[in-house]
Image (cartoon, rainbow, N blue to C red; front, side, top):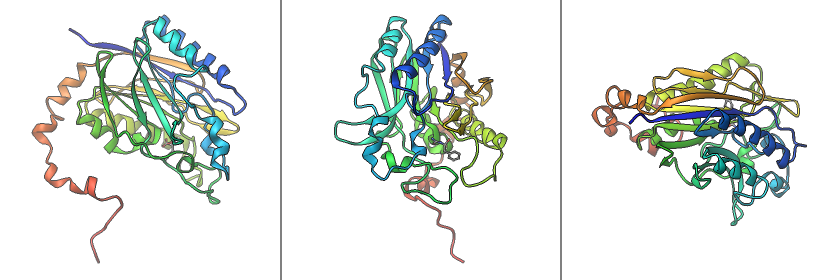
Length: 310
Ligand code: ING
């Protein structure tokens, strides 16, 4: 039986700090309605899809940022999204700031199945930026200040017709992210991102170069692990800070088969044949046949660079 998953990537335009959850959820709902009208099975929303990218703001008191976080999930603000999805048998990926009952803060994504049940949770492992104000940056990126590193690893769930995985934004820049899921046989990785168009440390990189880097991370992850990789941007100018678009769907061959054309709310779709993963998993990336783990110790035992002595 052919296993086609009709994926919708729901790119979001900017969310201003002044926009309340209700207004934002109405925008997400509109994208979900478009996806349902097009008979999509799963909708992928961005990282921190309910708020502006608040880690760009410095607060001395971390608790002053608590209003950017969700205390529970689902909650009354997002319930319309869960209700609509369940009513239309549509699953979705949603990124948000998680404030746990024990007082921990994570940059989190959930996977909700077509019965409206949360079947997976991921907490962002790779937190870019700083934990303290960085005077050298033109704008701040304080994810290390407001979030703890994820503590759930990189799980893969057997749900919605295939082996599904999640990651968030900066995670896509680390090959380990995709490989750990690849070692679990992942067939489709969903990720949301909020990526500044330019580098906060200076004009060393053009917007085109950073877009290329964004795409090669996803294409490499897909090809080297024989899986689909789909990415949903929060894009456009938030409070004058530009976020890149470039939402896309990448096939197991590494080809971009669909990509966003705008910097706003935009839905892109593709019928992802999960069995397209098999050819690569059974040939060039047959891990059991080709990997030599006796030479890989450094990858998990060493954190930073240790060059040979002079
Ligand atoms: N944003 C950016 C990302 O990894 C970044 C941060 C941009 C790091 C470019 C390095 C280079 O896409 C988030 N939210 O992780």
